[in-house]
Length: 229
Image 1 (cartoon, rainbow, N blue to C red):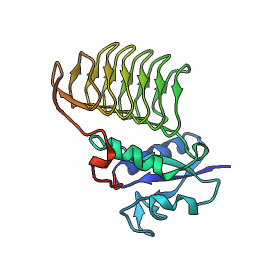
Image 2 (cartoon, one colour):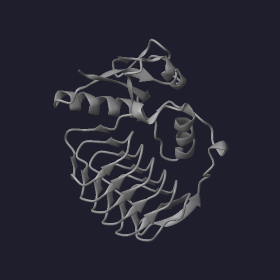
Image 3 (spheres, rainbow, N blue to C red):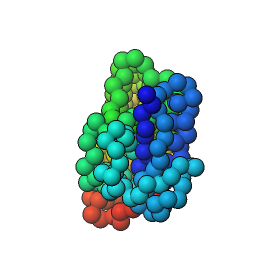
């Protein structure tokens, strides 16, 4: 029996997740897309050809056998996205992780619930991926790397051996986090950056080598909340 999946997200992130689920089903995974929940697209409209059933808070209206996929990460707005998810109160057993069939994940890797692993991602042995993390196309995680909950690894970005990203940290596309270095909670390393030193929580770094350019608020209360991605 196929497992029906409803995606929490919108036309951007949601479409990427939907395509990964479509490819996984074509490869034999017993999954099918039921539709979407989104706060800004009207009930009855469609996203990527699938119906929108209502707002995020309407998850309780759906059958108990429906499972959910999280597609609402946003670089620079991660604190309020984390808070939005937590406030929904969806039980752990209702979430699934989505993995594109054209990815490689070593057998010894731990993967948390709600995580997305895109096409051409490589995850080397003994890595650990937290809950609701996102690894975008072509990302590479070296051996013994650790991703915290809600961490985001951009397209073609790399973590070298024993590197660590804490809760909500974001590594931009084509950026590199050097071996045994840490990107702190909700910190951001910009596109193409070479992170050669530990980065404190909430810092934004950019360049090669990466240098701090500003600090972002870590409290979701200091940022507007939306769910349109």
